[in-house]
Amino acid sequence: MTLDPEDSKIITLARAARARNEASEGAAVRDETGRTYSATNVALDALTLSAVQAAVAMAVSSGARSLEAVALVSEGGPSAADEAVAAELGVKSLLVAGPDGTLRG
Image (cartoon, rainbow, N blue to C red; front, side, top):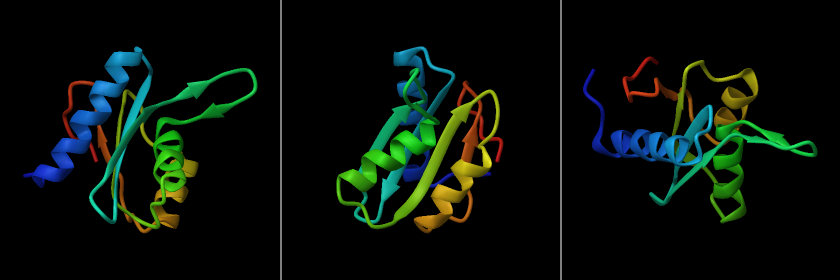
């Protein structure tokens, strides 16, 4: 499967965020204007967010009204909540890659 260069970019951003924070998940999103946001999962006593949820929250709080793409880099796959938040903002399917960047879905 040949990826669009912009989709490759958000996978790279998600991988970098995951590695930088030594987190279990990294995610990146691209909004309707082409701006990108990356994040990792948050696991605090008072707040728990998946990487996808954190990246989407950053985009929405910065004014994004819809998303063109969502990428998740993880050993596992997206949760139902990850898929739901992506769908709510117009993304039909998430780009899911392993820690090495190999696209799995």
